[in-house]
Length: 343
Image (tube, rainbow, N blue to C red; front, side):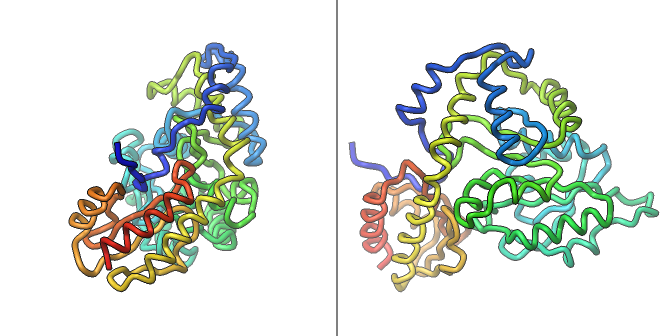
């Protein structure tokens, strides 16, 4: 079978032999009774790492985001977020479906909006006939913008605005690990500006499943109730929580390699005449590149014929995501294939 180099997503990572062994050896119990020691250890570890009082293990990042929003709001409330936010584009209309809340979209620049853009969107408290603004939501790194890192100075300013108006803040930190690995800013320093945070274990970190949400004790107590109501209560789940623990402790430090792979590949693509790419936007493990001589669908098919899998980023745009299961050798091979296809 010919080798396939899969750049579609970092969700495609598979557990290593060492991670599988950690899963096999995991001590388990009933997590709905809060008796799974491995889950309890994972929750304690992540809460401490992110500088929060408590944490709760989740089957998925989407459930994590949506439970956070549900607990922070009441039906009829409004959440301010970027126009390309994951919670708006990729979560199946869940804010309205599950919590009865609406989203007020900000036209951010590459996924990043400023307090000056947000403040005019906050509903007046006296406007009883309008939705009630309740939460400002930030995504870091920003998926649809191409792995862009939201500057911590901007995040701090958004928190100050939220405090000024008595609002909550939520961080979709599915790839917060990548932001931290690239900038050297700790995940706790990012998280301290948010009431609630969701982080994913099954993307660049390489675990097969799971996310964790963090907040204060009262929030986590209510989130535990909502998780049960939404069918997210799991039993002897230490076998997969162990993968998450292994992933954070062993793979977090390796994420910078994935960023380097993306930068090497993006630099080469920028030298091909029929490719358009802004190297300043290649910050972590995701980037987009435009194609001048064919449509995205045509390019996807040609790449697939040569053993490379990608996802579209638009009509004439492709998206590349590097991860731990892509080697530097495969990056070099991909450079040759891309040059053959697009030159």
